[in-house]
Structure formats: structure tokens, C-alpha cells
Amino acid sequence: MKRFAVVEDREFEIAGELFRWIYPYWEDIAKVFDQDTTEDEPTNGAAAKDPTVRDTIADYIDRIQLFIDPEFNDGITRWKALAKRKKNPIPHAQFAELYRWLLEVSSAPNPLESSSPSEDGQLQTVAT
Image 1 (spheres, rainbow, N blue to C red):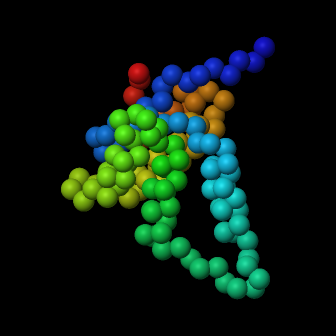
Image 2: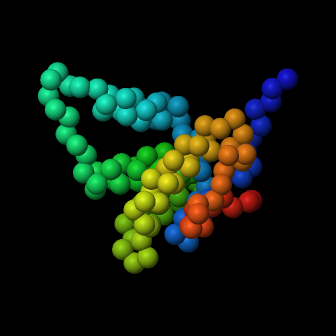
């Protein structure tokens, strides 16, 4: 019999802040995936506008929010503050790395089997 066990290790640390991740509500993550699909399609002969670097990073920040547990230490408010922090900011590439990792752990049959720290140690899972 296949058992879909509850994952115990749902915490991660980035830029010195501890967060807990959750599985995004299916309609919210489906909307993100649909947006990605439609951005690749031509729009009635009009050239698609290339996103700016600022738009891309802001999109990662918004998408990551889907995974932040709002009930764990006021996660959403802390995430927004962390993303805007100018002193000791999150390096821009880590937004993309964190988002990819969250997709990986939330999509894997057993998320703990696929989690791994980044090479520089900035993003890592924390055992509860």
C-alpha cells in the first residue's frame, strides 16, 4: 500500500532568517505554471516583451511567498521585509535558487530525499 506521509522537515534558512515552507494551494501554483506556459506563446503576431531583470527577481520573490507558511513566526511579513533589506541583502541569484528548491521539495514524492544545501551553504534545510 502506498502511504502519503506528512513531511516533518519543512524549514529552511536564508540570509540568517528561518522560514517554514508549505505546499502551495493547487490553484495558486497552477496559475503560476499556466502563466509560464502562456508567456512562451506568441500573442497574435505581436512580439512578446522581454522581462527586465527587476521584473524577473520580483516575480521570484512573489512566487516564493506561495510557499511561505504565514503562521510560522509571521512568515509573509518577515519574507517581504527580508526581500527589501538593503543591509546584508539576499544575493539576487539566491531568489531563483530558493524558488527552484521549493518547487523541487514540494513536487518530490518524498521531499527529504531530494533536498540538498547550496554549494555556498546559504540555503539549507534545517531539521526540526
